[in-house]
Amino acid sequence: MEIYQLLPKTNCKECGESTCMAFAVKIISREHGIKECTPLMEDSKYAAEKNKLLEMLKPMEDAGETGLIIHDDKCFGCGNCVVACPVNVANDPEGAAIGDGPSNDKVILKVVDGVVVAQNVGECRRFGKNRILCNACIDPCPSGAIEFV
Amino acid sequence: MDANNVARVTCPACACLCRDVDLEFDDRGDIVHTYNACRKGAAFFMGSYRENRALPKIEGKPVSIDDAVKSTVEILSNAKNPVIFGLDTSSLETQVLGVGLARKLNAAIDDTSSLCQGLVLERIIPGSMKTCTLDDVRDYSDVMVYWGSDPANSHPRHMSKFSYFPRGKKRQKGWETDRMPICIDVRKSNTAGVCKKFYKIEPKGDEGLINDLLLSLDGKIGGKEIGGKGIDGKEFAKLTNILKKAEHCTIFSGLGLVYSLKNSIKLFDALIEKLNEYAPTHVIPMVGHYNMRGMTQTLYDASGYINKVRFSDGEVDHGSQYSITSTLQGKEADAALIIGADPVSSIPLKTSISLAGIPTITIDAHETPTTMISRVVIPAAITGIEAGGEALRMDGVKHELSAPRENKEVLSDAELLKRILEGV
Ligand code: SF4
Ligand code: SF4
Ligand code: SF4
Ligand code: SF4
Image (cartoon, rainbow over all chains, first blue to last red; front, side, top):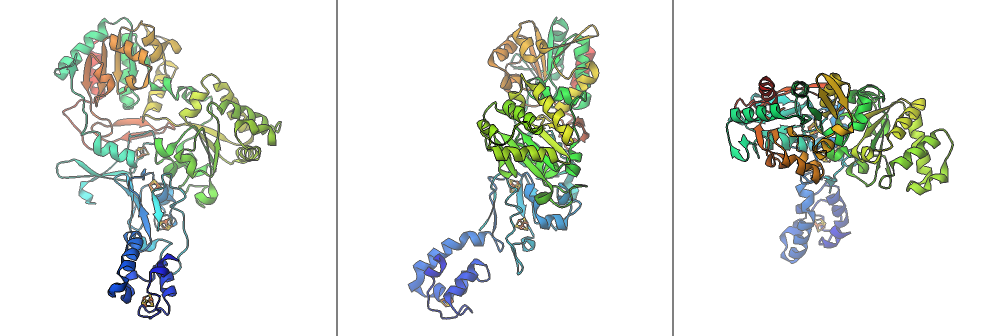
């Protein structure tokens, strides 16, 4: 596992986890941020590893807490993801659920200027304690514009 | 989004005519954001009125609108065999005026449908082929077949608004369980990528597939006998079964299908009839230009035919000799009036050369290859942005178009046709 290999592997517990391995797993599940490993951040002997890790994890940070990335340049603005997302359906039964443009601000996905944008990402089913591996916006996308990292 | 600067409009960038598009304006009245419109619609609203506008011209020289109209009246009045072409991106009102002008001039009249969906529309409009509305599809269709069509690119919101993803009256559980979208095409299109079933056929393989379906529906063939068409026998049996057991099936015929059935459309008739023995099966043509359905309906109401018509002293004649390609290649046409169409970009080169050789008048909002070869160019307002009106969606349902940026400086094509009609 790449993240673990680059950590100090001293199991110093400063991050609050008992092992570096546990910390690495929780980086992936987004329960920790890499900056919580203080030895890595502060000790210059880990500088190379630190830079590599920061670079590696950058897309995750850009994507925010859910890891959702939208590739604007690919998106057709077709709205398939807007209408297919179960959270949009539940939060907007009179709009997005029946194929229309969202009728309120509680939706996650909507189309602005011809491409999809995400908001309220905290509502996404891939987020939070009971998260599930929802693919309901990825499978209907004809252009491959949605990605989770 | 500032609610004071927002207007809800209908999008005429394709024949889905989405009615839920919001536009946001800046203080000068320019459209700066679109909401809900797909990329194609957004480009239409934010770009089309700013770019590449046509100017009134005679033989390439700038003139006044009045002079351009006067010259048009002269050319059309002196012509013995004028041809009118286009009107697919005009309002219903303009179409009625255009057909009236053809009648008054004893002209031949045709539109882009003769080059594309005409074969299907001439079945749908008189009612000889079973159809339904897109609202029916959303509410009832469990099986939808995109045949030679690629809505993801041509009609981006078709699947999200009507045909696959939305909940509908009898389709409440959601797309995962409620709908069975099928794509039949010669290549794996973007639409094929999101359909649950994709049948890749060979170019011009539609005829063979229909023949096999006709046999397999009646249980006359099955399994391995299908192999030759590039479709696996087992998968083919599944297709037959899905179509047979559908509660409400809709086939979206695309250009891929229509072109390949040019000489064998009767086979498609037979298939739809046969399918209806088992399951209610409907056809909706994937009309491109936003009001081609309106134009074919308007001409049908006036003449009994959807395209390729010639008026002569109140009589109506119809036939392939009156298609744009035939009238121009036959060298009979001695003047052409093109309204909101760009035939030079879509018809064979030979026909374009004939068009350049006769006095051609083009009414268009934009400069196009056709305006460039025209003797007279008359600029028009953009319907759906600068002028309103009504249009028929691809399924024939009438929608009101909006004029969120009404522009009094450019006349609408309806006003222009009225002036020409008064003159001739
Ligand atoms: S702080 Fe860093 S080095 Fe210490 S246990 Fe956590 S991951 Fe390992
Ligand atoms: S992952 Fe699921 S819940 Fe999250 S945005 Fe996509 S469809 Fe919606
Ligand atoms: S489904 Fe894909 S292409 Fe369509 S709006 Fe969503 S991200 Fe864009
Ligand atoms: S699908 Fe067609 S009508 Fe709807 S927003 Fe896109 S271009 Fe406009």
